[in-house]
Length: 351
Image (tube, rainbow, N blue to C red; front, side):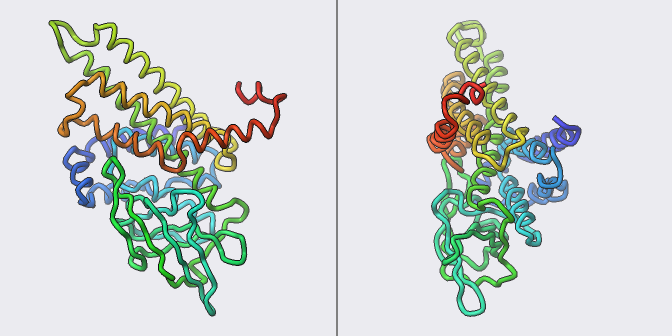
């Protein structure tokens, strides 16, 4: 971790550790915008980390923020704001004040940008857009009609209709309808080289990998503490072989997941290649399901109570593992890459 990364880790752990209270998380699940927390995030400069195009360590440093978001189950669209800001910068568009979100979060679902007279019009739908109801601007990746290209379009949320929805963790995942929304030519930007949809999916998958890794780190620490505190039949449950086996298995999964996420962030290829990101998202997603299961087994009935903080992390694991591509999608992508490269390179790829 770089010096900047260590500073970001200390800053975010301190900020989220103090501000992300159970009341704030529970309120966010009931539709209350945590305005004070968001203001603190903006004041700390966390929404505008260094651009990866300008610094070699910037991507890995930003993933430190993502890791902290997951560790503290921070109920704000910080990950989306960072990714949206990068897309705007890379497309040559000005930054925007207020919370940003990004759309779409699923491949093969791009709204269409069509020319209408001297201007443009955006039509289509975007499902499960993170925090759309609370965002000031949605950064849309759109297909350009009759051009086969793609564009980046920042739209004020006041110009579109959003249908409220949520994921299993209670985080807003709203559906947006773009009903021939007028778009000025000055609002449209294009990436110099990369396919915008693929780039957004890769960045989102990398961010969710680190958010899940952070949540799993917290879960493992809490399970260790709980197993050392909780007594049953006159002894701490951490002394029972069955619990020790679950803890060992959980530690192995967390270690593998964090290693995969870290390797993807430090790779010279992201976000220009599916390989390291696909491996990370697939491995972290697989670990997320296992860690959530084991954590609730260790805690027993206690882990299912709303007052206990475990579910704020495990429900996010269940939700995030399917966002920006499930394990199956990324496993297929990785498998196709291996097949294209041929058997002579398989050992090098594996090692």
